[in-house]
Amino acid sequence: WALVKEAEDLKAKLDAHTAEVAEDEKRYKVLTDMIKKAAIAQFRDGDKKVSIAGSAYNWEVSRTSTTKIDKDAMKADGILAKYTTTEDSYRISPKIIKED
Image (cartoon, rainbow, N blue to C red; front, side, top):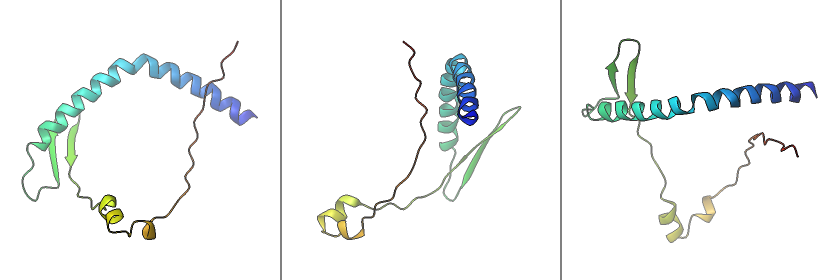
């Protein structure tokens, strides 16, 4: 399969690149977490977005609210099973073949 061969070649190239930038990615994560924390501290009631301006980027943190369902409470009330559904999802995960 030419498609698989091309994907394998590209995956190997991307894996090599990922290894090269791993330390930078870790540091970037630390920095963005710190920026996010600073922005969250600036939120006021009613704000949906806070922005911290840099020289090359505007670092925007937005707030959304999510409604969640308390499954434990539903289970305790005996109604969880009635409203539980199963849904299939698919994910592709390339696993390297070890050469002996």
